[in-house]
Image 1 (cartoon, rainbow, N blue to C red):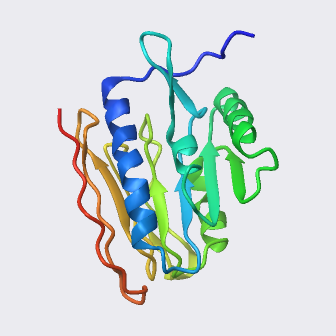
Image 2 (image 1 turned 135 degrees about the vertical axis):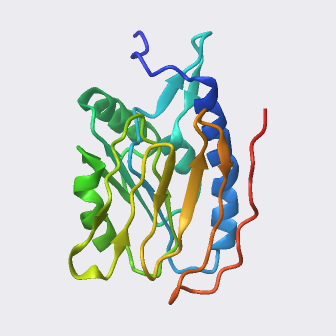
Length: 198
């Protein structure tokens, strides 16, 4: 059976995936004393990217599954990519235990996802949009403020929640990531700043 058509792995895509690959174990190590930790991918894609020579590279969802998170939240708007993602996830985890899949616009599912995560649980948000699909918004009641900027600098901040940023410059090259401590959150030492050059 011929492999499905996956999106092209551009050089900047590979750099971002390499950055995430290095960031994930650092995040898990820094939060090892936490009761639970969660991973949210707002623009998950099909699970693989294809290089020029035809070889496949694991995308962010499959990279995240290799690490110990209490739960995973994957959102994908494109129907075809969603179907491919579900199939690829089932190959790793047939029952999809601890995996929450959403088909549609990430902005519409933010509140639902946050309701399933304890306010103090360390949570890594990977928001790598191919378009300006992130919207600025504030959840009802003002208890959790969410700032979703453009695809160039994807940032999600939730009050009483650890803040995590995966930033890229205009060429898609990761600039670095940090694990900070927000008011009311458990004391966690900062993650090492990771940079990718070349």
